[in-house]
Every structure is written in structure tokens, then in C-alpha cells.
Amino acid sequence: FYNKHVYRYYSLFFKNTCIKHEQCVNSDAICVKRHCVAAEKMDIQCHTAAKCRKPKDGLINNSRFCKNHECYQLKSQSMCLANVCVPVQPTSYNCKSQAQCRFGEICKFELCFEPVSILRENESDREDSNRTNDDNDL
Image (cartoon, rainbow, N blue to C red):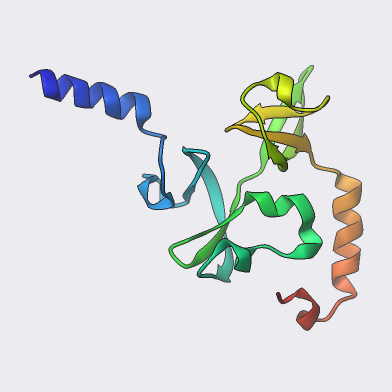
């Protein structure tokens, strides 16, 4: 009786905690800072996360991981202020509290997230269209 209730409490409280990607119940979730986080496949095969990351993509690489030989990227995250929501991406530094992030950032999953620059994304899309397929390979 005792073990059954302890297990139920443990599984409810810690169901989204993990150490490895494979421990996440949702097949499209990945383990980030000991939490299962929604992600989406990138249609790239991998053995390590390095294959999923491209130098030209900068900080967005922090949200890419290799799970079961496939690359995944965190699904679009967002933050809202005064009923206006904007997409955010992880930065390269950790946090334990909001005070450790810079102005305009949020602390989630022990990572600081910053708003995605739409202008920067559009500029990089134009650059990508001018490159050959070889330029996009690692």
C-alpha cells in the first residue's frame, strides 16, 4: 500500500523529469536540464548533437539535440508581456532565477531565453536562398 502511493506521487510529481532523452514519455520530447520539453524532428540523421547544429545558426543551436539518431529542435517557445506574445530562443547561458537573465529575457528550464529577432530571421532566409546545398552541410 505504502509503496503504491509513493510511486503514484513520485510519478505524478516527476513525470516530466529526465536524465536522458529516452526517458521522456512523449516520443517527440527531449530532455533539457532534466525536464522533458516538446520538440520537433528536423529530418536530419545524427549520432551526436553536433550534426544537428550549424555554425551560421548561432544561438538557436542551443535548442538542437540528437535523439535516436534523429535531430530535434525545441518547439517554438514564447513569452508574453501585456497580452503580447513573442517567440523566444534559448541563449548560451544558464540561470537558476529570473534575476540571472538579462533585461527582456526569461528563465525557463535553467536556461535564459531571448526574443527571436524576426528581422534577423528574414535576413538569414535571404542569405540561405543564395547558397548552394554544399554551403549548408557541416
